[in-house]
Image (cartoon, rainbow, N blue to C red; front, side, top):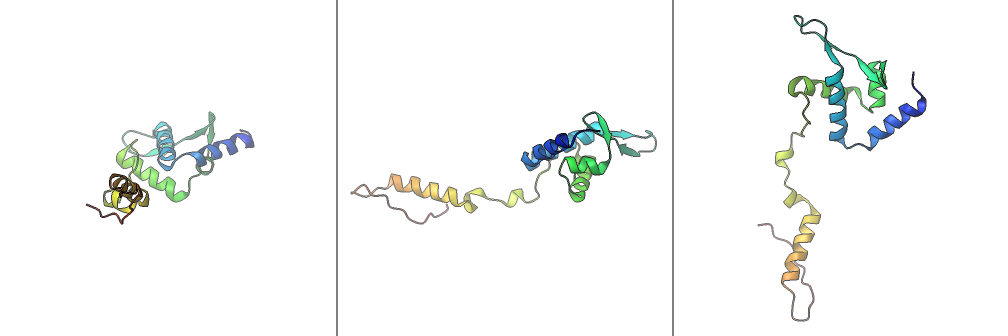
Length: 130
């Protein structure tokens, strides 16, 4: 069908993608490949293609570095939300200002630059969140 080099290049490209980018690639292909058998039956099937040739689901998952669980989760997400990127459920609990040591350090540095002592030494003190 296609060369081993082509399939390894595809896998390598998928490994280099960010999580949400890979999700969008797969969701886009699901949208393109999903077909209804009969409009009245609401049954659907997916015809997977790679380089213009039909492949089985396992080959599609291998080429896109997908586990069975991730594939099923993407399929469920697509059926519920369509071609929309997935969001982590705990995003609203995450407070970048409080958890990132880098943010705390930068704030300390800025505060210290504003409050230099008379010998031009920086005074670093523990950062108090406001």
